Length: 407
Image 1 (cartoon, rainbow, N blue to C red):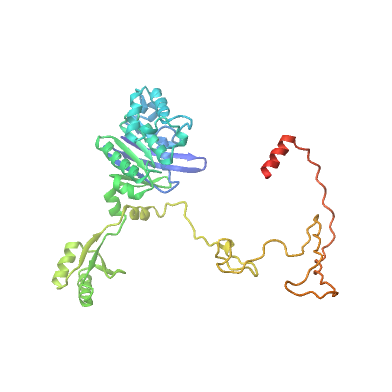
Image 2 (cartoon, one colour):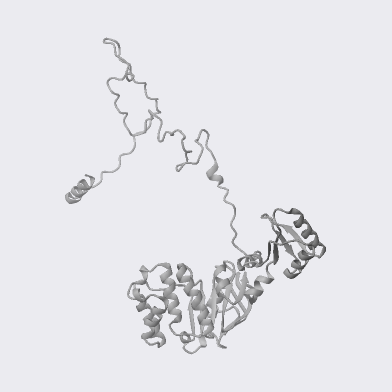
């Protein structure tokens, strides 16, 4: 069992965890929820003795982690799946951990098979995908066959098959009487995996209860009632009967009625007494995500804002409306790119004009003066650019290589 009493952690002027007390009991999967920056990772680090609490204490099986005899045999943890030497293979990584804890080498091959990495056991971990790294981290946590397991985002990067495997595997571990503490942001997975929830916000405890109680306490349950669509009179009769009995009735967009304040059997009896046929009478309970959002809405530190795109929507005078891949609307006339015709750049000579220029297709009368090209606009005199120092000549073989590459 994990027990925290008055746990507090400060980093300078910032308080990451404040007066946090809870228990994680064996035989159940306990979910650890909270917004980003709420102190979940800091709490897990204090449980594992990686961070020293500013105040309070936390114990595992009645002892601080640092005083546990042969702690890897009693506690397994996955906090950072990337904390692996990339040059080592999966088997080498686990073998090093096993040797440090006095665990037999055959256990390495066992856990590699459990997490499904037996076929890549000799592959360097730097070539692992995110999901493979997660599996390797889970294998490391299982290495000592511990009774207490902590997982921080264990399904991050896993495919659907891997997520299902982790879900069932955690339930199996808990059914064996182990203590399983899981931190995750995936509410759908927590709803399917966890039996108990510990929710914190801004370092303080918000809830410590079962999943069912958490959803019930943080959501508004109601009943959906639907009458025959072709008979609006029955809907009006039912609304009147339910309102007289103390229920609150609100119309839904799909034509159903949302009824609160009355249990389902009472709604059925009132409809029968009013001689109203029901096409639907179903309970509605909020999901874990809805309940979580309602509880933590005041403890979120990082909120997104609307992207106004103000800088991108400013139009220059005469600019073509935006919309195309390069800022041009589809079908809009092409815009000139570069300098206007005839612009003289400092340091560049004016190209010689062709000897004869006349309108395309216009006949030329012998003896008539040839039309001349319009003169380029005059530019203010500029100082000639400074000549850069001559670069040293390249070796013959390098010059030859560059010439061949140019071809």
